[in-house]
Amino acid sequence: MPVLNDVSNVRNAVDSILAQSYSGPFDITIAVGPSIDGTLELVEDLARTDDRIHVIVNEVGSTPSGLNLAIRASSHPVVVRVDAHSILPVDYTRIAVETMERTGADNVGGIMDARGTTPFERAVALAYTTKVGLGGSAFHVGGGEGPAETVYLGVFRRTALERVGLFDEDIKRGQDWELNLRIRESGGLIWFTPDLRVTYRPRANLSRLARQMLSTGLWRGELARRFPSATGIRYLIPPAMVVGVALGLILGLIGVVQAIAGATPWLLVGFVVPLVYALFVVAAYVVYARGARTRGRFLVVLPCIHVSWGTGFVLGYLSLTRNIAAHTGR
Image 1 (cartoon, one colour):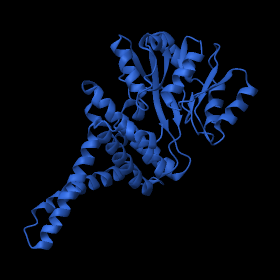
Image 2 (tube, helix red, strand yellow):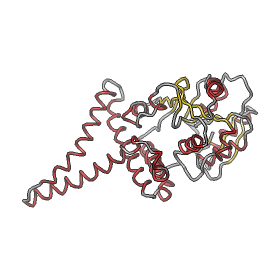
Image 3 (cartoon, helix red, strand yellow):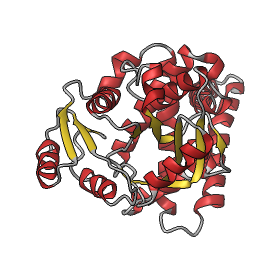
Image 4 (cartoon, one colour):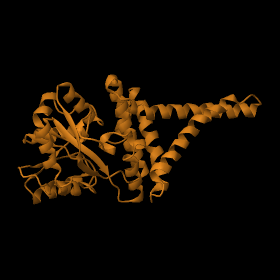
């Protein structure tokens, strides 16, 4: 588990690991980045109460660096990746290992079951679990069991990780997708099963959500530039929307100037693009959020996800990732 400034979530994540019904031996390796909120002190306290918990320092602070440090510091043949925002069900490891043995997969994963505790978090969770939110991947909205492009978190064979050289530490987000791509290219199998559901706690406010989505979009754009043939169409829709809405607003404003100047304001047609997107958001609200207690926040959350992610994708694709990502989170 890589952790950075997450003192409010890490205890619940660790407790969910300790409660696993898996009958074999296991331990927990937590790689702590340079935190200023008491995270290191908390996990060190947890380690003193249970000798299965080991804490190592992740000086770089990035997620892939922490993952690689933790993997190298551990020794068991199966590696279970856990996020500090996630809570594992008690049978998670047992089901994952049984599925791995049954299918021969190198990595097994399931559904990122987003659940919020505040009205805002519940609105984010609703957006995550609908096809209009994050693209409709099986690990967000569910689906049938079978081979997959990537999965949420993942339970890996150590031999597969060692075969492909662990996580790429140059990729700060989207490193799971890139690792799974290398595993598949090496002949390995990535397996999705809806029997695995991991509770995920969304970001708690709009600014944190925007930073998360911008950073994720930045690195998705970088990955699309590096691996164009492996980039699906769903990744291109948010950046196309952002570019279209931006151009539409610019053209529409020029049309307003035309009207003021007495010329034919034919560029007002540009406003059609942002209007179409606004109607899409309203339609999504009607279909998915009508009647939900979080419905008002959903109208803010959904554009925040789309615009932040899409803007990040454009910037990342234009090779601006390294200059911007450091200011938008891990």
